Image (cartoon, rainbow, N blue to C red; front, top):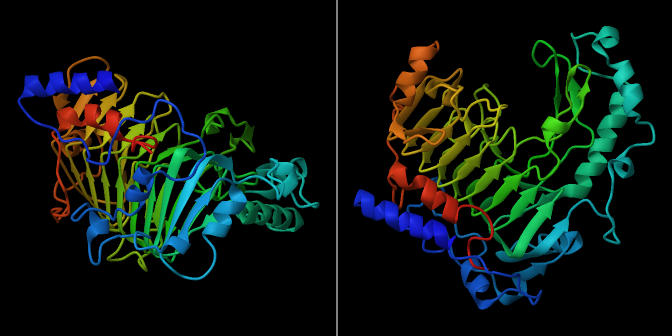
Length: 448
């Protein structure tokens, strides 16, 4: 990181501008400390609320999480059982430190569980594939019958094991290189939650659902997000890392003629969730990254899904960075790398969405066009200003993303989102975004 800092200084001198790295960012420790609980620095950080004006989560009463927790509601979790216990009990502000690395896919003796351990006795994948082969079952209806029911029971057994249900008024902070593997953190119908400094990896679904009606050829659909917001309000996701680990969807086999996809979202924000700030996170090696709004049907999402996405790194994710429906979503100062051959798009303009995208930086491969960085999903409104694009090792150049898309594709986007964000602490020049985001985004950047 010292090299990056020197590079930043040189770039600043050349440009005559002064970037400000986030005050809470610090050099990660050179070696992990012994498991002795939270340090004084970690305790201070856990008491921090979201700063004033830092995105949509600062609206209303703001987001304080469990910063007011008394000593009886400060917990340290070093394994699945301790994390579940720390997030249970009576309603009260609480702070939970995730200490070190552990898996949610373990039994009561902390021994790893496999997909076979979750499988219902009546479930058999080979029999499932034979029964619901489109040549046998057809494509007009979703699977029904005993094998599908056994799959659903199997999925429930896995879900009961790996889901992490977070209550309101909670701050969860990772310490000592925190990583949660094979888990799905659920923020359902809660408010005032902060999640910081944790690496989330590989929430693989052992029993994805087959839907022959999804698209022309059908699709496998998995169930678990690494972090899922459903009906959640005033949430701050900050300095986390999200990936599939070493279990990539691209390495899964074809089944029923379609990729057997076992991962869903990295951090989806759906079903009336509102007032969310997603900042300084690192997303990499993932497909369906961030879905904001899960349906085109007007309902609980109307007037909600207000989300700020800033200073995040999206490194060779395939799509949804983010894909938006309905919400007023502020997307600024993010660093996108779009060089993987499976890349789809970054910004998805969905039904009734209003995206304001400013000072984002895209590093793309030469076989993509500038218009390929955004995609039409039945939405029309997006303001995109201050964008820089770099192709390979060439110098970055300014791009009007909306004009580039409109020149290549139909229907045209309107270049006016219909609103202008006000909840921001600062906006960095796009040319500095790679330096700042590489140095600051992701877990293990907060010095604890």
